[in-house]
Image (tube, rainbow, N blue to C red; front, side, top):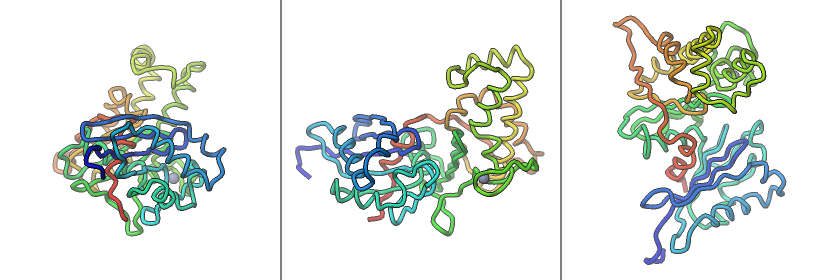
Length: 306
Ligand SMILES: [Zn+2]
């Protein structure tokens, strides 16, 4: 590297809806931009890596030099091959050697992992999870994303995947899930469940257009709305208690758009997590500090395999 330039790392959070690109240097975030992921679907597959690379390069100011690129991608990822395998929500970046193509394009190290892993790395290095030895992060969005770090290292299954813990069955209610099981945690405790049920209870009120104060007021006025948040907390707790029991994290971070409503469902959640004293578990729960930026920021520190 030229001694007069300063090194920066790029992080990309590839989601089904948006692709956030972020440049991070010694003194913090240098620049960031989000582009709609659908933009890449209209480009031929062989040109998509090149298009992504040029978005990254555009964000690097003069006098700075890119030294690495990390990608956190929604859904399953083959971290060793650097290939995304998410046919459901990220088809346009799946089943071709994206990491290798970006490596050739940018001539820097490229690493790749699931977006939940990227987000927990972000909170561990830069946010609410600093100093945690065993950190659990639960992201409440369209589905439920779960990632666990032990002294900063991601926990993986024997096949190298991160645990898809949103698909732990928690309910006797046999609602079918797209994963093939019935009664999965994410069918009952993702933001989608909360959104659908609030919109059903309050017709004509779009969830994404309201804020926490609005629903706090609604819950104070209407028992059924308060009960709905309570039930949501309960469902969330029924899956979370399994993870807390098995992994015993010292800290749990809640993130994603539904985490914003934590004060409204906290009581229901606590109720589902409380055991008798002899069987008590560590239920220290805090909201995410980095919010939407956690994934892209964490992607800058995904360890490289090459
Ligand atoms: Zn499932």
